[in-house]
Image (cartoon, helix red, strand yellow):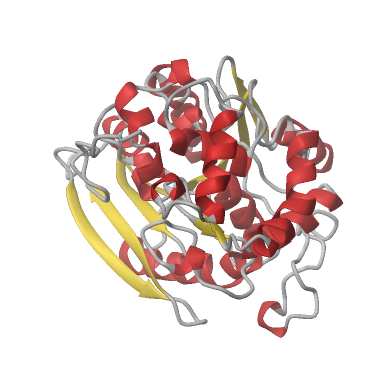
Length: 368
């Protein structure tokens, strides 16, 4: 099977027209070069700023997709003066995801977000800053915020998951045994494009086996993504929620990843909530060993957002909202989008009608 090249350039900002776009690279204390992108319009109703944070293997591309009404453009259209996107060390625009060695969400909490926020504050000063974060970007951002690595956030929308985690049984089995088995078979990373690889190799064999179990479409990248991150056919979204162009370029939006992060995710899944990858690691000194148990009493209101068909993190955000509503009654909110799953709340072709208005309403109410 040969798929045509996507008509959309990776990394394009053409999906946010009539905006002044500027790139702001910055460095982390542990020596990585990352990127912030600023989208600004001169005539805006309010001076509030929104930062968009992606998840593992995706990038800021999920927020600026030109084939549909995207979240960055929607926020600008609805009166926010500036929207910034972050490409963290988990972004598929960088090589860091597939480098060997230990990788953890603690790295983002300790290094990526404090450095990104310092760079951003250098440009926006003390203006109100809201954050929309997705998946493991949402979890790691919450780890940094509730772990005391940074502050000064006006409000947060946490999409799909935050500090509390519950996954399907098949996903739990995969995260428990899968990484060690894959490495034993000579599969060092999971890449949606592995079906293009050399014949008669373990990665090509994996793609063939996964595709055999996924008859729901003819896109092998879609199959591998479902196998890698959830339980479902497909797992991360519903096909009916996606524009065909988006489905065809799903491997551009969700790239490769090594197995280092999976070890941390395994500890989190087994605990049922966010915990440190290695409490003895001196690089993360100052962060709590148990992010939920030792969470600081942060004043930042959260909207816990999820779809009712979430086949990656199930009702994790429902449970997280319940926990933090108990700790701080009236501060946090929950929104469950009917017919949506894990990622289509962002990349769905009708998300601007069904989901984005809820996000904008929450941010504007927190701004007063």
